[in-house]
Length: 511
Image 1 (spheres, helix red, strand yellow):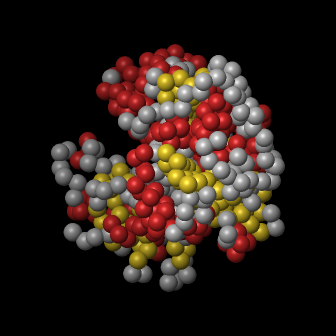
Image 2 (cartoon, helix red, strand yellow):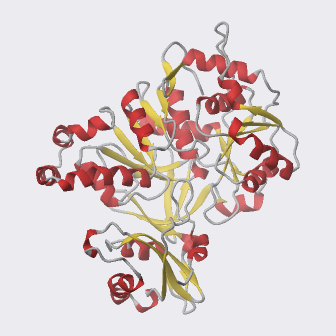
Image 3 (cartoon, one colour):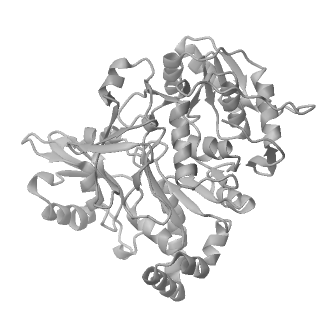
């Protein structure tokens, strides 16, 4: 899975540049520091850094199974994964050492604990490029624990075939990634979307990856500029933040507003790139693709980036599909859709639910045969997502099957549909609909920066009069919101932005 050698830069991290030969040397040295039998489990728990990557590939060098764990997870969450997966080795950064020791004690296991900082300090005396022996394509390549939008995580077993199917989809079939691609590593690598999109795929093809030292905007911008990044992999909230910064400046200038309107009318990427050259330069000047995943991208955000001359590619998938099921092809963007079915994958809609089949679909959940049998039936993955295809073959997601609320009168309500309508109000920054005490309720994060309020404080009375009542008057009686709550806190979401609806009632506090 790491075939390129030589002096070409494999990893950039701040001012540090690591060549492919140096990366191989570090992996070979790291793999000698521990014992692992083929198929044994090994955990990697650390913030994104070069040592994370070295640790991961050193596990593969031993034919072990890496288990990436969220470095921001609580001790009890880490202990759950450790107990469930029983790793022989745990890699962690110095900062996570005490948390890992506590989690290991709670899990009642006795793995070897290795500090990632020590791996990074390794200085090879002479070249010793590792000769990696690949495991079989059906062997488990990685065990990834789902982030848990509904409860306790499950370990998803992905094979090497699953990973390679996704690699081919965005390099051989849709030429997004090339050997000269330069990809920013920003999202936490424990999740399959950035693991594949910002590490495994570019390194497999011999590209260069640049790790942003943090999520701070200065670090992100410096990483983009200093490495002439060609592919940004992000979640909708990242793109919403970047777009807000750009559009605020556009809206402050009458000339910029006029040029934006002109670009929207002409709809030419070449024209937009020319007149918004400054915007492109601030992002490094080389960005070819903005890839969004993890949750649905706001169509307005996608549309604005398109007008500014960026190619925004949205995908749909899940950990169980390694991760892609559909993907947007360059030049075939349809705002609001995560694209068309990936090559080698089959998708059908059954009772509104999206089902997927193909060589990218997981082997199953680790030690969970009953739960595996629930979602894998006759080689079809029951995704739990609801959606439909338009006449051109573009997929549209309408919600989660498990989140459909069944009222006492038998009516079905899709909470995502109500949220989309509520978010049309300029007074609503974010919202989450849930069902409690036999009534539909919503938690609302007000948009305090909205200029339409004329300096007034957004309070419950304003939300009731200008948001809830107009909403209730526009929907069927059974879809009416019967109780609402305001909060200044962010709504509970996974690290990639998916709403954790089961936690919304915790924010439902009367004032």
